[in-house]
Length: 313
Image (cartoon, rainbow, N blue to C red; front, side, top):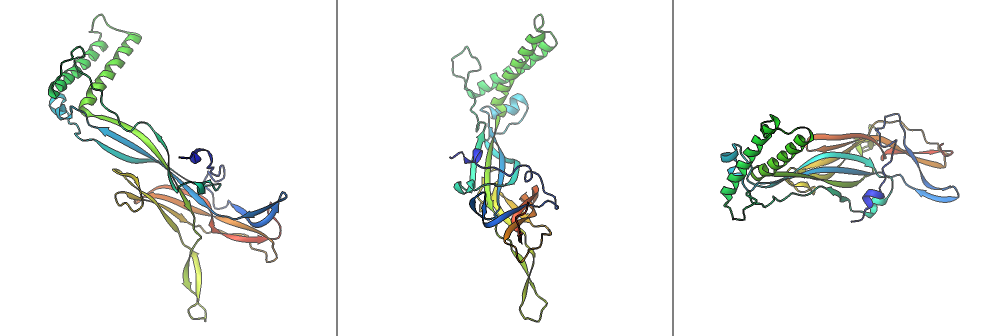
C-alpha cells in the first residue's frame, strides 16, 4: 500500500488543531484571480479525516487448561478468542487533496504480534520420553509450586546461605519468568496489537429546512435554519472489529456535523473579490449511543459567501 498516509496528508496545524471559539473566523478567497503573477482558481471545500485506533486482544487457551481447576485451584478459559476495543480517535480537516489518490477507508498501520504459540518443551528437560498430557500438566503444576516455594525461601534467606543484592533480584526475576511460562500452559496467553484506520468524509453542501412563508403567495416556501449532517463511518463490534456500515454485528460509528449561529460581513453589491466564510460547526463522533469525540471545526459548506471591494488583509 502506498505510504500516503504517513507523509502526504497534513492536517491544519495550530488554528485547526484546537477547538475554535465562536468569535474566530476562517475564510478563503474563491473564484479566479491573479496572485503573485499566477492565475489562481480556488474553491472552498471541506474534507474531514477520521482516525481510529483499535486495540486487538488475542487470547490463546493453554494446552493444560482443563486441569487448571484440579491442579491449581482456578478456572481457565478453554477456547481461543479475539476481542476489539476502540482506544483512540481523532477528527481533523484535510489540508490538501492527497486523499483523492487513496481509498476512502484505509488500514495504515499495525503494531505488535497477532497471537503467540506455546513453547513445546518437556517438563523434565533431561528426559526425552514422551509424556501424557495429564502427566505433563501435573509436572508443570508441581514446578509452579516449587518455584513459589523457592521464591519465599530466597526472600526469607532460608535457601542456602542466602542471596542478596543484585544476585537476589536476578534470581527473583528468573523465578517470575519461569512461573509465568508454566502458568500460561494452564491459564493461556494474552497478546495485544493495535490497528489504525483512516476515513475521509467530504462534507456535502448544507441543506436547510423548508418553512411555509407567511405571504400572499400560496405555496411559497422560505428557507429555515441549516440542518445537521450525518455520515456513517463504519461499525465496530467487540467480536468482529471494524466492519462495513451495513454489517449489523457492530455498533454504528456516526459522524455528525451541527452548524452554529454565526454572523458574517455583509456583501457589497459592487464588490469584485469573493470570500467563503466557514461556519464553526460542532463535529461529533459517536459509537452507538455514546459520544466519544466532540470538536468545533471550520466547515465551509455551512458558511456564507461574501463579496467585498478589495482583498481582505
